[in-house]
Length: 291
Image (cartoon, rainbow, N blue to C red; front, top):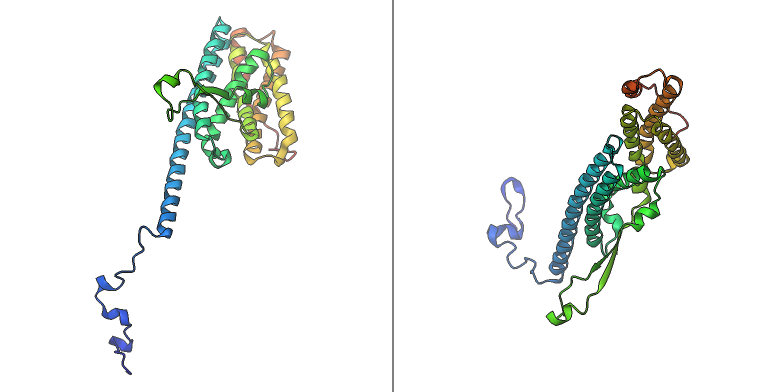
């Protein structure tokens, strides 16, 4: 075989096949101090830090969602509570605690590209927009703007850094640090879309308590919101067009109830007015390419 041994079946053995298994590549392992290993360790640390930050943001977003929902549940008590101002004050305290969670989000995102972590916090921001806009509607019967919401998310805190400071200079050299977090247009639109469902529930509670003015105010407001969303149509994000159908359902229920109240309001006893909303609403076919 011209100097090369043939193995079983006539195949030639390669040179390294004659070495023991544990000695074939001895001395060829990449050194941990090589530039390649150093670079990959740096990449590993960066990715681990980014994943840890993402998980912390997910937890903060979950806390923001829970506290915002509790604020919304509290605000629904206004229709049956005798003292509306007391509930509004309590809701403001709850929203302040939510903003403290948002402050932690802003601190986590300091120096980072928010869009890389947006998926982790968008659920909480949408729920916060829903709670704030619901409170604003109860106060003013109008829609809060995105700029007004973002103005409330600017925080000023004292610098907590302890490095290069002596105990005697801590009290004298206090630096103020400004943190801010901006709600994106998508978060704002999705939060307002969810608001319409809460307003429909507010109508049910109001009518059940004999209040026949609130449904007409809410109906006019929902019509304006729906008209605004109709201008967006299919050109907006997928989630917006997806929630537009739910908005359409809420508007139809409120408008049908307002029609029944207007036509038969004097005939229906007050304790039975809420049954108007229990009538199944026939939704028209999806049209105009916006559902």
